[in-house]
Length: 357
Image (cartoon, one colour):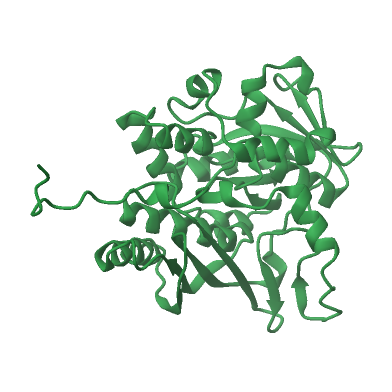
């Protein structure tokens, strides 16, 4: 006989969503098709960065010394713990500010929740997680907007400030630049394993630690001479965001397959067939622009196309300052930073190589 007084079992957040984290993003090819039919914003002299180059945030010049950076990012749960979900979503949204070389000023919450399914305490914990990460970034959540939705959605609209002469975009890389990635790959693989109950405690801890780490080194990188371009690696995977950088600079991005580090357990899970649907959609969108993939096993391709929720920064730097950049990153708590490729003359596409020649 059922116990009428038994405490209801908590609802798994991930069970309420058809996808999670940056794996929810619209596939690159479809997004490009949609945006191609969207009317252009028009010419505005003070709009320094708009939608034309698929960059991380919009930038509006206020004066010769200041520019506003604005972005929004939100998604469905990648984990079941509501506080961790809030932390991950907030860190991911702020990453777009840091990737432009800017410092965040404040954020607004974006909230869509199935209020007849989730108790107020759970929704409150999600918002508390986001506020905790914003507090760690030194900014307030100054307001926001909420709706009753069929799936849980949380994120931020974030505003930052940058000097116009220190903006880093995804299109200003130069021939010969080394490509440095600041975090390990495999977030999508670990989150898929989590949903399949195949992720152990160490793997879950690695997933949460990576996705809640703020990319706050971005503004410091922007201050260094020799740092030419930057973007954050999120839903399109390392290959997708490196391809955006290659197209922006009209260069070939050579990626060294053995160079990017993987989160604990991610490589073994990938070899065991764990992958996300988003990695397949990513490859279908841009695989034709990747040379050399046939020489490597499928699981390595999956790792490079794996959607990264709150992933690392991909930074194009002059080879002469690689050591200085790596020292800065390690001092700021990014021990898995690695040189993962380089930009070189050639068609605007990706070329895969096992290691640096």
